[in-house]
Image (cartoon, rainbow, N blue to C red; front, side, top):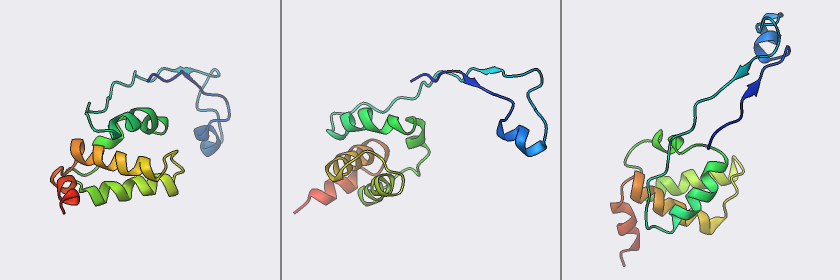
Length: 118
C-alpha cells in the first residue's frame, strides 16, 4: 500500500520546537518509499482476516518485528491488546483466527496443535 506525499507547513513539530521554520522556503514534498512488505500466504482462515484488517493500522513489517517463536497464547494476548488498547477493528472470533494464523506462520506452530489436543 503506497502512501501519499506529505506536505510540511510552517508549523511542523520541528518548527515549533526550535522556534523557527526548519523548512526554509516553505512547504516541501516528502515521498515515502512504496510499502513492499507482504503477509506470508497461508491456507489458515486467519490469513484473510489479516489481509483485510491488520493493514488498516500497520504494515506487514510490524509483524516481523515481534519476537520469533511466540506461542498461540502470546499471539492471542497481542491481538487482545490490539483490540482493547489500540481499538483495532477485530472481534473475538477474529482474534482466534488471527492468533492461529500468526502463530502458524510467524511463531511456534506446535502450540497451535497442542491447543487442539484432547
